[in-house]
Length: 363
Image 1 (cartoon, rainbow, N blue to C red):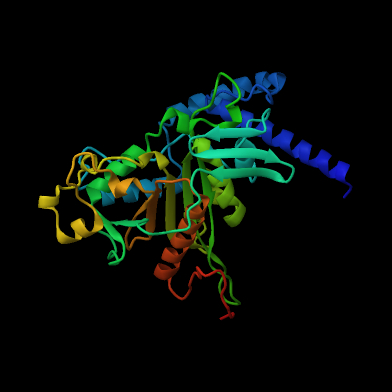
Image 2 (image 1 turned 120 degrees about the horizontal axis):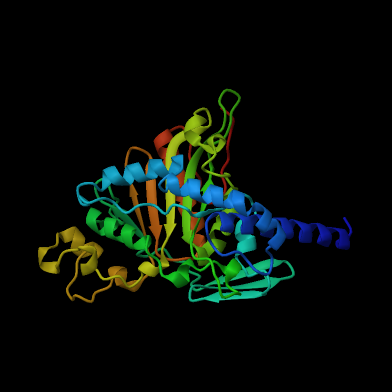
């Protein structure tokens, strides 16, 4: 394809994505991009968008099927430490239901860069370059697992349920700056919201006798971290709109392993105090809590020494919810691979290879 023809096709695709993004923002009651919005088109669609918005409000912030499964798991798992109710997953998120939406929203349309305390993004001839605040290559002190489910390995930190419930509640309360969507960051009226993505990664490939099996994973991130969702979408694909029945894993039992994952990005959790999480004082802590750092000596002691971490909550039911207190892309990718391994182990007769390669034979 000639360069000019290819450039024209790309420009047209970007225009279509921008029009679709503005429609979705308007349907959510959020400001649209003034540099890309078509006033005539939005005015024409406004009665329909208002009707959609009002019906959505009447539904009482209804969750999609996958989110309902995750929320039901959390409600049951944490009911003994949250008598007044468990924190709710974000609803009315901007759902990335088409490939490429995350990339289009990771920069303002009229600018070639975007900067936040967690990320710097640049428009370059090859596409978009993202430089996250941290580019880690270590997992030391990273893995934390909540008590009460499957046994916690000795080399992982065991987190009390109450501490996880508090971390979950705080994860749902990011700062306004963290919620700022880059797509509208070049104007006065800016969109502030969560973005979400549905993944259906392969767990067990098809054989001559059996169809392929996938799991479902829901990703949630504050708007300014939409590039993280674009990154994992580029690796694992886009599962579509989770509110549509054709994308409901429970209605596709032949191709679903029965396992559900959830990943929540919350870098604002760094610095949260151990005492605020309900962790015990050193004198009241068990030997394991002292070893894992799940107790405090000084009231100002930060959780995990103010170092990035991820904390996972899971049990035999096959639901795994992970909060990542960072926006490093590698942690997002590794968490999806970890949840695939979790599903593969519970499903049986299949295996996820973390080393990057495996010899496979049809069975």
